[in-house]
Length: 231
Image 1 (cartoon, rainbow, N blue to C red):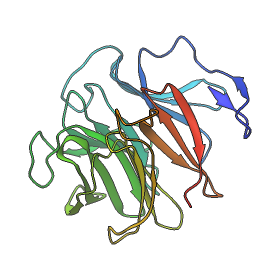
Image 2: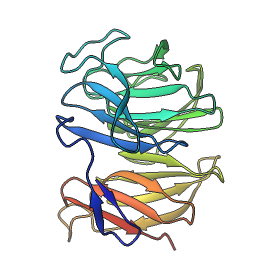
Image 3: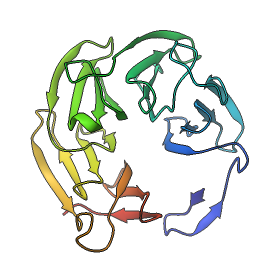
């Protein structure tokens, strides 16, 4: 669905295309990317909703490089390469070139470096790949070839997004908060809502940040999108 800056609904796209769309991203050319955990595919759509690229096999789960098992998120590097966190059914990251040809992958289920338990979100800043390893309560940082660099333990990363000034924003639906993190892993800003069971739902599942610093969250339990500002 598309809304104007005031939140007014404009229109919807590809209404009959998705089984259970999970995350949505917009690339530098305004193409729309979605991960669909119900059909096991990642789709690239034009701004008008036309399918430009499909990764995975529709409604067929698998664990080779041509299949996903409930892919959770997608991100892109400066060369147009595509990174998919294949996180609910598999515990890995797959890398493709901009045409959708598989290049490499890394990860397996576990708690060690380079292992994952629900890689739920992925974001890229330059040569750094941030993976939200949700059930291991950490963000793992890799280079673009999948080499482990370090990890930050900051809670349950449900959604991640990077900004041009090299900050990472993380939303945590368990702790009902949003963190702004610098490149050293220091939390430099925080926005809190009531934790689960403590008040009105704040259940941020995905996050985006626009050029003026406005924060947008999508909530699963609350069934809403919000526009917020971090003071």
